[in-house]
Amino acid sequence: MILLDKPYVSQFLKDTIKKNNFPAIDTGDIITDQEISLISPEEIIQRFKDVPSSRLYTNSENSINWVINNLGFTKLPEYINLFKDKVEFRKLIKSIYPSFFFREVSLQDLDQIDLTELPMPFIIKPSVGFLSLGVHKVVNENEWQKVKQDIQDEFTNARNLFPIEVVNASSFIIEEVIGGDEFAFDAYFDNKGDAVVLGISKHLFASEKDVSDRVYFTSKELIQKHLKQFKDFVQALGDRAEIKNFPVHVEVRVDEEGTLIPIEVNPMRFGGWCTTADLTNKATGLNPYHCFLNDIQPDWEQVLDSMADDIFSLVILDNSTGIEVENIRKFDYEKLLKQFSKPLELRKIDFQTYNIFGMLFTQSKKSEFKEIEAILTSRLNEFVIEK
Image 1 (cartoon, one colour):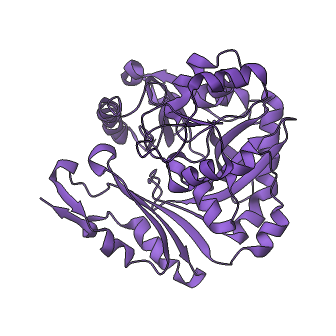
Image 2 (cartoon, one colour):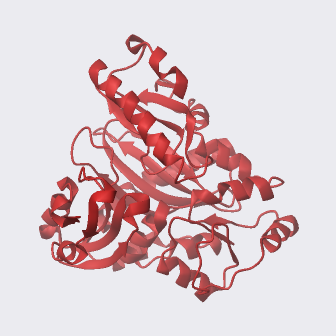
Image 3 (tube, one colour):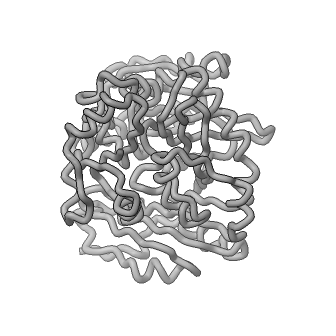
């Protein structure tokens, strides 16, 4: 079963629902084309009463409130809170990472923080957050003053875009900077609690201070290298929390010694905006939505053997231009596409509402990866036409 909600449902997910006749409901008035036959919310509730081990996927954490309000008799709200609240998550894994520093702080207490008690540099982010909102790296005291004001500004705007269950500005977590390369991967726990990994991507950054979501990529080599380690971590996590029949989107870092330290785990979904699951499909042919809902464990040896040696990337075209959206007339998507050797799919986003111009999936030869590095460092001004 699937809950559909704003901000975005991909055509791939819609086609998956139709092809497999997956029961789905619309919790956010996102399906306007009547392309999908929807069932009533009462039917999903009754299915969980009849079969408590039923599986539920959502494309958006906006649906979390629906789950809490309607499926409180299941284990789902407990699982959601465990992962959605980053403080609770750190408590869960404290026995695995006993020396890792983290501290919870309220929004109104930011000015009372004694910086001498914190590791410098550090990361501050909402205990409950989404899409890098309110995530900042602080390297010195002067920067801290600016970050505090930035947080106030960001959450004034965020309250107008996302439900309180998605972005809760009342509490933040401060934690030590996690070194190493960053990865995101989708997984689920089956009815026995066994972990199943459904795709792996690497998150690229333009600089040490960059915390944006501009580029993720995946490849045969990447998956082969990290599959076992990532599966072992998710299994250890699931064993501690006794989780079953549940999908997650996991973000971790792996340092030069190969040590894995988790950043966060996002509940009930894969990558937001139908991103990482759709990227996995383009790169491997797997359908992560189908795998989770039909309890399919990929034969990764066979999948990897059939994969191309190319690099498959997701480019998130966030508005980093420094130009206010009300001063932007249009974004030149045609010019953007010419920068890439093999664009696979372009998703245009209402940038006036979400401050994101769109998302682009691409395929590149290793020798052509410079095109991905170029868009990673671009502020995108060259594609913007001002009023």
